[in-house]
Amino acid sequence: MLAAMEFTEVVRRRRMVRAYDPTRPVPPEVRDRILGNALHAPSAGFSQGWGFLVLEAAGDRELFWSVTTEADEAEEADSWLSGMSAAPLLIVCFSHKDAYLDRYAEPDKGWADRAESHWPVPYWDIDTGMAALLMLQTAVDEELGACFFGVPPEHIPGLRTVFGVPDGFAPIGVVSIGYRMPDQKSPSLRRGRRGADEVVHHGRW
Amino acid sequence: MLAAMEFTEVVRRRRMVRAYDPTRPVPPEVRDRILGNALHAPSAGFSQGWGFLVLEAAGDRELFWSVTTEADEAEEADSWLSGMSAAPLLIVCFSHKDAYLDRYAEPDKGWADRAESHWPVPYWDIDTGMAALLMLQTAVDEELGACFFGVPPEHIPGLRTVFGVPDGFAPIGVVSIGYRMPDQKSPSLRRGRRGADEVVHHGRW
Image (tube, rainbow over all chains, first blue to last red; front, side):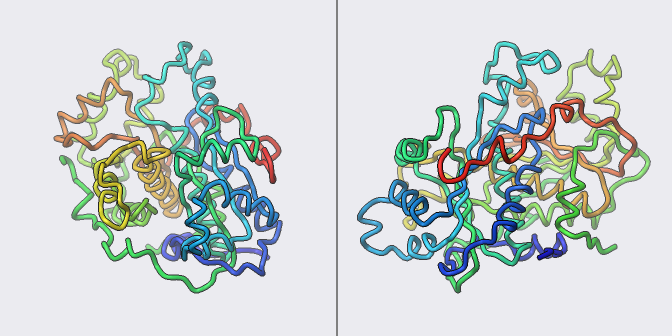
C-alpha cells in the first residue's frame, strides 16, 4: 500500500478520532511508516531526545489502560474509554531532557554546565510533540484515525513501573491509531477555531 | 499558485534552511496559507493558546535581529546570522498558558483551581510547536525554505518590549521563511539520525 495524499489534504482532514474498529489491527508496515515519519521530526541540535513505547498485543494495551485510568471510570464504561480502548495500536511518546542537556554541553554548543536556564522552553517536549504530530498526520495519510492524549500525572509512576520506562523519560502523550469507527466530534470544537484576526499580529502585537 | 506536494514528499524534504534570497519576498497569499495551516494544529481542549507575530517590513525584521542577537555577534557578520537575517518573513510563535488554564477551569474539564500540577507537560508549548511544524511543512509544500530557532531567554524581555507583546505570551521559537539560497547543512546532522532500533520499544521498554 502506497499512501499518496497531498499535504494540504492531510492538514485539512486531520482531526482527533476517538473510536476504532477493534477487529482490524494496523498492518506492521503502516505502523513502521508512522514511526519512521516520527523519527523525521526536527529537534534542537539534532538531539532527538525521545523514545516511543509501542503497544499492540491485547494484554499490553489492557495493561496500559488499567494503569492510566481510574477503576471506577472503567466500570462505568465511560464512552471516551470504550471508544479509545478499542485502538489496536498505542504509541506512548516520551521526551528525554538529558539527551538535550548532554548535546548542548558539547563544545560546539558550549553549555557545559547543563543548566536548564539556558532553555527558553522545553524543546525536549516540543520536539517530541512534533514527532507525535507526524504520527497523527501519517495516520491520516494512511486513511486511519488517530488521537493524541495525555497521561495524567498521578498515573505516570504506574505506567513507568509496569512497562519498565527508565527515569529521565517523561510521557508527553499517547497516540492511539486504528481504523475509524463513527465517533462524536469533541464538544470542544464547538468553541470554534480562533481566526487569524485573533491570533496573528503584523509588525507589532 | 496551488501547492500540491504529497505528504510523504513534504516529510522527506523538510530540513532546516539557514540562507535565503533577500530579494524575493514571500507572496502574501503564501504567507497567509502558512499561517492558516498553523491554525489547524491540534490543541488540548481546543484551547488554541497561541499567538503569532509576523515580521516582514525590513525595519521590523532588523528590529527583531537587533534585540535578539549580541552586538558583537552582528559585527562579526556571523555566518548563521548573515544567512538567517536575509529571510524576508519571520513568524515568532508564542504560547499562551493562561488560555489553557482558563479552558480547563470550565465545567466540562473541571480544574477550577487552575493549578498547573494537573498538567503532565506544558501542552501550551507543545501545541504551539505543532503549529510551528505545520509552518515548516507548508513552506516545503510551497518550495520555500524555513528554519525553526529559539529566542535566548536573556533576549525575551527586549523582544517583548519592542514589539509590545503582552505578559503571558511566551516565545517558543521563530520560523524564518524565504526562497532558499545554497546553505550548509547543520553540522549537527553528522551525528546521524537515531534509528528505530534505538528509540522504539515494543511491548516493554
